[in-house]
Image: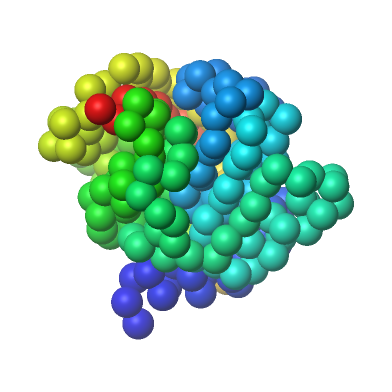
Length: 258
């Protein structure tokens, strides 16, 4: 099974868990990203790897049209249900391979990918497809977790992410986000960093966890307690895992297609 098939299978299995998770629905995060991209009522938006559709739904009264595309048919089903329940007529959702987006060239004024690039082995191909679908003068924007500067700490959190969700592929470095824009001759217009905090029990709910997996995560967190400097990003290391909190840096980057 190739990795894209693993991603599709994993998100089909955990669609309900993911839809119940509070982070994608956080109104401050949704509003902040919308403002970062400078959305206007004349824009046509494409959200790539749109998940349960929360960003597209949130954008519906602020754009002319919005479309979400995702590889998971279960996630798209949940997204379409939200559209129907809210009687929204200017948004759409499509099942599609984000490496080969099912849209014509130069179709949208804004193309985004939010909290999804770390699931994509060929993220450069995905970014090229995002650019293809963006009109000249339109904006392309990314938002995702980024690596820690300390390799030992970063290795712990990469192992943690892969245990929590096997569809996690790789967290990008800040320079890797920037290189996507430079290599494609897209001038970077804006960047922003923020830190988000999760409790470990809350974070585990967004994906299905077996007893075996939970034990592996517990062992990893026990080992993490001995790493110098980990307290900058992991709280309550002297307590049980159920009381631990951790922090991650999130990077936002936007540019204009010339």
